[in-house]
Amino acid sequence: MRFDYLAFVLKKILKFFMLTLILPIAVAVYYKENTSILPFIYTGIIITILYFFLRNAGRNIQNLNDIRKINCFGIVVTSWVISTVILSIPFLFFGISPIDALYEATSGITTTGSTILTHYNYPHAMHFWRALSQGIGGLGILVIFIAILPQFAVAGRQMFFAESPGPGEEMLTPRIRSTASAMYKIYFTLTLILTCLLKLTGMTWFESICTSMSTLSCGGFVVDANLFTRCTSLTLWIIVIFMIISGTNFNLLWKAYTKRNIKTLINNEEFKVYINIFLFLTAAVVICGYFYMHQPLAEIVRDSAFSVISIMTSNGFAIDSYTSWNLGAKVFLFLAMFTGASASSTSGGIKIIRWVLVFKFLKTEITRIFHPNAVINVKSNNQIVPKDVIGQVLIFMFFYFMIFIFSAIIITLLEHDAELGTLSALNAIGNIGFTPDCISTFKPVTKLLLILDMLIGRLEIIPFLVILQPEFWELKK
View 1 (cartoon, rainbow, N blue to C red):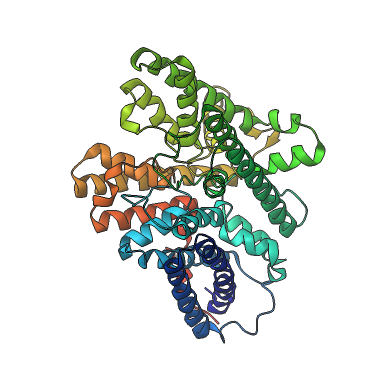
View 2 (view 1 turned 60 degrees about the vertical axis):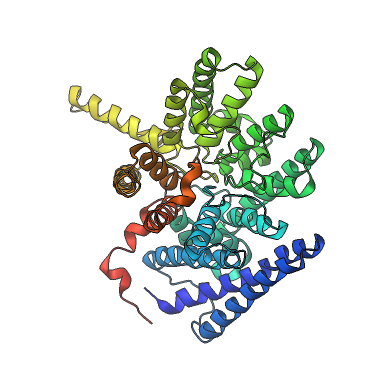
């Protein structure tokens, strides 16, 4: 691991957060919450001190042209950990304990949306900071630097794919920096559109901005526990539509926009499976709810669609508590936790394309048993999928379920509740956010395990497997 490369990137991150602190301070000034300014000033001082210690490290580096892939993985993991710690600092000054502050920050930047808060009686600046953490983490902290910093021009491709090492890694444009910029154009445009729509349907500007950042990032933080119970049906359906969009492959969205051809999107194999799974699970939950819930059918359909897409995209928004659904609906909502949404989206979880490739791989292997001499390739969108990609998918699936099962067992033993342990582990590793209300009472070691799971899930496991290798820890100049 090259420490000078790491220090070079960390200094960029520290500068970024110094500028970012201006936003919550502006919110505090606007709402005349003067005491809310100090936490962010103190955070700025701490960041300045950290930058001072790193000021001479990596100063001779002008670009990252010769960076190795192992260094990219190391930079990605370290950057996310450092960013999480920085985001947790302001929470400490609002009376939140260090572990709880770290949990809230991790949940924000990994867009998990599971909150440690037991009430929402906090200043606007803190709620904005929570929403902003999800906005930053939505497409990835390093994608920001690839988009805006010239030093990442050559190394950008490795950094970009190290942060999201899954299938579907095609570029939007020939230059990776332009790709990152295109993704953020989509991201910010959709956020702006949703903000205006939410305002028009009854939310305040502050609620609209924070909810939009949470929706498009597939985050799930809200500024008020009763926010969605106060919303109109139109507002909830708008959020459903934008949750579907946020779980769609951003590559496809950009291509459909630039080509002015919606068929680019609807003919894509992963998108079709994504929509079909959403419709199937929604219909199943509606049927289960219709016979057991005393609500008008229109409300059951709305709430079912909202809950299903919220879980599939790992958004974590909830109109009602998960426990309020009947057993049949719970089963289908539980299945939604394993599907995920599209690759190259802001969603977490396994991702639809991985399931598609796994089932196609199993089908080809079964076919080979009956036709041993046949040449059969796994294809996606009429293109042959390389064997190394299939291998990476299988490795990902194996470790995903292994980490989930291990975490579920440990949490069950710590909290003495098997259902709680299973749901908490699955929500953390999948960045789903549908966690129980009692999470604030968890033991500190349980919270730390969930923090680790959220980071592993957000970075899609591979970078963390890399840092477990002895070679990674060999610091080099």
